[in-house]
Amino acid sequence: MSATAETKALTPPDIASRKDKTPLVCLTAYTTPMARLVDAHCDIALVGDSVGMVLHGLPSTLGVTLDMMILHGRAVRRGLERALMVVDMPFGSYEESPEQAFRSAARVMTETGCAAVKLEGGESMAATIRFLAARGIPVMAHVGLTPQAVNTFGGYRVQGRGDDAERIRRDAAAVAEAGAFAVVLEKVPEGLAQRITAEIAIPTIGIGASATCDGQILVVDDMVGMFTSFRPKFVKRYAELGEQAEAAIAAYARDVRERRFPGAEHVFGDAPKGIKGGQAA
Ligand code: KIV
Image (cartoon, rainbow, N blue to C red):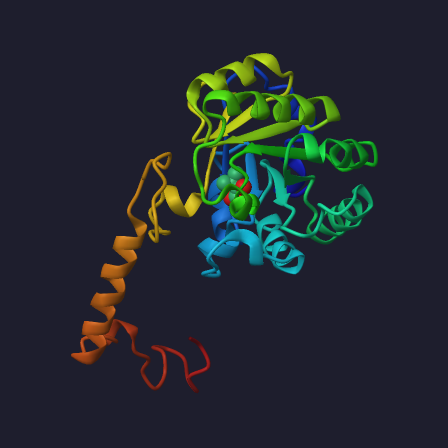
């Protein structure tokens, strides 16, 4: 039996059962090497549509396509053994009708091997979530600041302050009632996150929503300092890999220009020691 077969992958019901327990640890991943690192420490690996901004240089998530999500999803699948893999449904692939959402989500699941999808929206998406959940497609919902609605919101502002809190509470209640197994709460005030977490029966996964949630998620490139175009207040930097990579590239460029690289240890002779005809490496 292979190592892969011995490791039990987490399922959507496993995640749902973590309500009010040890916080769920979640990060995004878009590539096989990063998925391997995430898998060793996290409960959920989300192939987020943030991939468009983080890896493809897009100005928002709106230009991300189903084909992009599937390509990155297939790469992430190869790096995971234990974490639940969730793939984001991109803008335009699910909002039109429950049937459109089913067709897109079924493609994502069959072509990537993920066990669940994520989609943005609250009350307006409840019928779609119910439709998908009843047809074998586990859904993680996403309410509060939903980046695909950036043009409707007029920016990436905190959602649910003052009278607007009721709207977010209704959204969270609607997706839980419709059958989502967890919900991302993005950029909402701490008091509101705490209230919603107490009110609904499924785990809340916060991003900019305080430690009162049942779990946390961040964009991995943000928290390791690889994506530095902007830095939301809710991101904690655990490393500065972007700065390290920049210094490494600058050192390589200096070495090449000054003929210090490649050095003697990187160069091949005519024939390796002890081998006639030079067939070995
Ligand atoms: O696309 C994404 O990465 C996300 C998370 C930040 C929740 O939706």
